[in-house]
Image: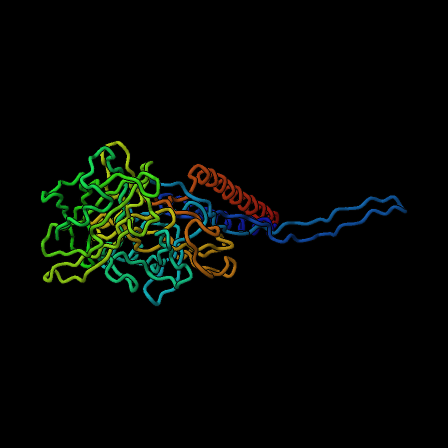
Length: 464
C-alpha cells in the first residue's frame, strides 16, 4: 500500500520539476538568443517479486515472465535544445545573428574567462569597445595584411583580443585614416585621330617646348587638342591639381608602317610645384589606333616626380603615369583617369559588419578600412554547454573544450547576419501543450495519493 503512495509522490516531484522548466521557457519566450529546455522522465528500478521462468521442453511446461512492481519515476534529463530561433530585423549595425553553428566569444575584462553566447545585441561603449549589455567585451582579431590583389587577410592564428573600433595596438588611432601619397595614375580612353598634326616630324615639338611644357611652333603657342585633369596627393594628404595636355604631333612612316605621335605635357597650377623631365614626352600609335608599348623612346609608363613648394612640409614623391589603355580612333577624345591611388586623411564616419565577420570603417575621404573581425567558437556538443545566466554559456567536460576560434563561414562556423537578432527558440504552442499534459500527470498522481490514503483509512477502520 505504501508503494503506491511513494510512487505517486515521486511523480508529483518530477512533474513539478517539469512544470518549473516549462515556466522558465515561457518566461524567456522573448529573451534574445535563449535556448529552451525540455524534461524527460525515467522509471525508478522496479521491485522484483518473482523472476522469470524458462519453458521446459521435457515436461511441456511453459515459461513465466518476471513479476515486478515499479517504485515510481524520476527526472531523467533536462536537455537544452540548441535549435536556431527565428530572426528579428533591427537594422542596428551592432546587432548580429549567426546563420548556422557557432557562438560569439565574450570576456569580462582582461582577466575574465571566455564565455559564449548566441545573443548578438552588442553596443559600442565610450572607448569604442564592442560589448554586451553587461559590459563583456566581444572578442576577435585586429591584425591583418594586404595581399597583391588588395584583399585584407586577417591573422586568425593570433590570440583573440577585445574588438575596439577606435584604436588598437596594430592600427593605433582608427578614428583617423592617414593620408597616402599617389604612386600610380592610369589613364584610359580615346584620342581623336581626326585632329590636324602641329608638327612636321616625329619629335618636332620636343625642340620647341618652353619651360612650362607648352609647345611653341613657328613662334606661336599651340592650344592643346585635349586636356585631362588629374588630382594627386603627397604623404601629408596635400592635394595637387595637375593638367595633362595632349597634342597630335605627326603622322608618317616608320620602317614601312604608318605611325602617329602625340606629345603630352603634365603641368601644375601652383607655380611653387615643380615636375621632372618625364612630365613631357611622346607616345606613338600604329595604323590601327593601338598605342605602341615596346619602344623605349616612346615610354607609355613615365615616372613623374613632383616636388612640393618649400612651405608645404612634404618630401617630393614619384608616381607612375600609365598610358597603356589609350587608343586613337576617329572619335571624340575621351581620356580620363580610371585608377588613381593616394588620398587625403579622413575621419571615421560609420562602419558595417559583413557576413564574414569583417568590420569595415567608412571614412570621410571615401576610403574604407577594416576595423577588426568577429570570431566564432564551435563545440563538438553544443547541448553540453552549461548556462551561466545573462544568455551566456560556459564549456563543460561533455561539450568539448574551446580550442580555437574560427572565421565566420569557415570550418563549420556559420556566417553572420548583421542588423538582425536571433530570438528565443521557445515554441509557445508546444509549451502550452506540455503544460496541460504535465498538469494532468500531476493531477493523476495526486489522485493516487488520495485513493491510497482512503484505502489506509479503511484498513484502520477494520478494527472498529
